[in-house]
Structure formats: C-alpha cells, structure tokens
Length: 305
Length: 121
Image 1 (cartoon, chains in turn cyan, red):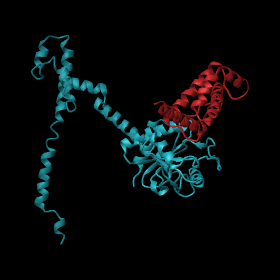
Image 2 (image 1 turned 120 degrees about the vertical axis):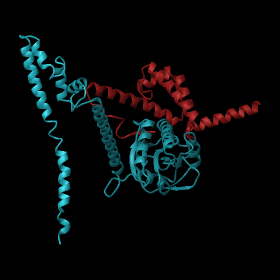
Image 3 (image 1 turned 135 degrees about the vertical axis):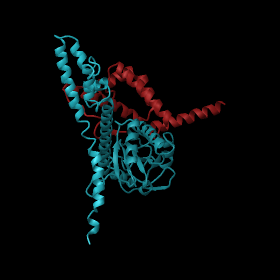
Image 4 (image 1 turned 180 degrees about the vertical axis):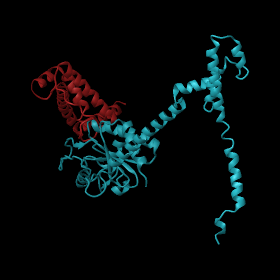
C-alpha cells in the first residue's frame, strides 16, 4: 500500500555508506593544528632553553621540527594557509581589508550609473509634467482650432499640424528687430532638430498683421529665413481668434488706412505644440538655438505613439 | 544707358520710399542698412550724452550735433521704426539703470529673461 514511501533497506544502507566516507576525512585536518601547536610549544620552550644552555639541546629537537630557524615564520603562514598562499598576499589583504581596487571601481561605477539614471528619469518626469500640464480637463488651454491661409494662398487649418510637433511663432513682416532675430534663431533651431529627427517638427509663422501681410508678402519674407517655414495669415477676425487661442497679446488696429505705418505689440515666444495640438512648452529669448533644439528634441523623443 | 541708369535709380528710390512709408516690409539687406544707420545715430547720441532724442534738451542737442546721422537713419529706416528705435533707446537705458540700481540694492536676479516676454515690435 504505502510501499513506495518506505525506503528499502539496501537503499538506506547505501546512503549511509556514502555518507560515511565523507565524514571520515574531516577529522584529519583537526589533529594538524594540534600538532603544530605542540610543535610551537616545543619550539618556544627550546628557544627559551637554548639561550642559557648548550646547542645540543637544539640538536635533540631539530629532527622533529624542520629547520629550526625557519619554523616560526612558516608555522604562522601554515595556520592561515586556507586564505592566502604567500605572506605578501596575506599582508596586502590585511592592509586593504576586504576592499580591493576592483571592488572600489565597481562601487563607483554602480554609483555613477545609478546617479545618472535617477537624474535622467527625474528630467524625463519633469518634461512629462510640463507637457501634460495643459492636457486633460480643467487645465489652461493654449492653442486650438484655427483656419488660416498659407503663403501659397491655400487653406491651412490646425488639422494640418496634427501628427507632428509644431513650433509656432507670432510676428509680422514690418517687425523692426526682435522678429527677424527670432526667426533667424528659429531657422537655426529647426535645422538642429531636423538634423537629428527629420520631419519631426513643423515650423509655423503666424502673422499678427493680416492687413499688410498677405500670402505673397509672407512668402518673400519667410524665404529669407528658411524655405521650410510655413507662413499663415487670414482675415482680421481669423488672426485675432488664433492669437486669442494661443494667448498672444494682440494689439493690431482694426481699421488701418492704406499706407498707414504702425507697429504691432505681440508676445515673443515660440510655442511648442505636440502632435495632438496641445501646448507643450514656451521657448523664449533666454534660450539659445542649441538649448531650444535640445528642449524640442527631448520632448520629441519622449513622445510614444 | 543714362536713361536705363536713371530708371534703375528711380526704381531703387521708389522701393526705399515704400520702405520708409511702411508700404513695403524691408528685406534682410534693408534691415541691415537700417540697423547700421540706427547704430550710427546711437553712437552720436552716446558721444553727446543724449538718451532721449525726441523730447526736451536731448532733442535740441541731437538736432544740433547728430543731424547728419539722423538724416541717414531716417533715410534707411521706416518712419515707424525710427520713432520706435528712438523710444526704445530711452526704455532700454531706463531698464538697464533700473537693473543696475536693483542690483546695487541687493535684489536677487531671477534666472533667464523676463517671465513674460512682451515687446513692441
């Protein structure tokens, strides 16, 4: 019934036999230290006895021990021979403790690796927080739907920007100094981004001055900065609405007499928008083209969809 | 040739006039010319220690000593730009003085540019 559970007698016997030979060698090393201790005691007694008495005393004991002069040293090494092979090795181990240069290197490398990883993750989370600050319900909304006309006179809407990041800048062609500088900067950062992630970002220039900036003027104006720039204009209402959606301060006079010269107040930020048309981050005058390109590329690389 | 040269000159002059009146936006070279003329005017004002060349004593000094530079400035820039740059000079110097004063009073400098970038441009 329960036969398979009970081990047979021959099996038990064989197991015991196997176990015995293993136990046997163990007592062997034990006598050795005892012997050595005896030997040392003998040696110490001989050295003590040696000083006042004659050399015959040493001769009596010398056959039992090996060479009498070397024994104090070798016996010390023999006691610890399970750990180290030479005295030098033992000494160095004693000096450095359990730490070697390999252990130290491993420690430092692991530390650096972890520090880098945590810093990297922290920055990623920071970017994600920035990127998602305008997502979801009840968040301030920057950007939105619009319908304008591009530099070739074709209708261009916010739907045309979906699927890619976009870098949006507001300005006007009669802008005295900041816009041209910023557009040159935008061209440089766009080239930097394009070099690493081709086609990841659409550069867009939206005029705040629709009365003077028609598609043709925008085309010649933007061609001086970058051939890839998309210039958008529209009616006064369309432009006012897109400025409002992007929270751009807009002060363009509504009824301008032909030939009347005026300047326009406007915000001077680059708006980075994600492929879903949500605002990610504003890049300002304080960012160099390289810094701005890095910010954009980091966000582009974060995007997984 | 003379007729052709004259026609070219008048065309160029017409374009410049359009830029000055604000009917046409200046291109890259025209902007550069304007900025250079502006800097020349600014240098003259610096030499005569004038900040505001639009009002009061400053205007008198500028009219007296920097008339040539002013003319070149007005020649190469849109009229709206000339006024803008003259006003901007005052605002910019005031801003710098203010920052210097605040720094002397021990104010903490905030990283980066102004939190909200606005410019009359």
